[in-house]
Amino acid sequence: MQAVRSENTTPEMVVRRALFSAGLRYRLHCRNLPGTPDLFVLKFGVVVLVNGCFWHQHGCRFTNRPKSNSDFWNNKFDNNMARDVKVLQKLSLLGFRVAVIWECSLKQNGERVLERLIDFIRSDEEFVEI
Image (cartoon, rainbow, N blue to C red; front, side, top):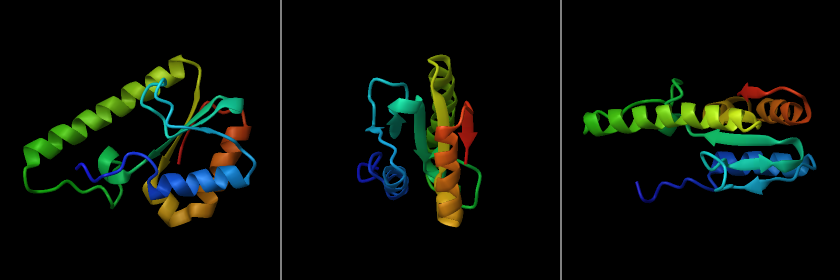
């Protein structure tokens, strides 16, 4: 698992390029925020989490659990999902607006997802999961 990147993944880079092209500026991987969000759009108080469907167990067709060493994987994925819930709660309590972008949605409807994200950032909505 050492080779698995947590930063600068392909889905994250797609989101970054779209936001930059839309004139939105952001900070990367803010380690002082809960969960080290992928992007932080300071001007709008928006935190963007770009989640991989496998690692965060989205429930789509990309969410399969390995059959070998199943105890390890079940424990790992359960911990990941519990941590995701805690991070979202902490970010909301701190007053941040949160956008969760799933890898599968970017693969299937990339342009529409990115337009929705940009609209969310410029709106007053508190939370969006795309």
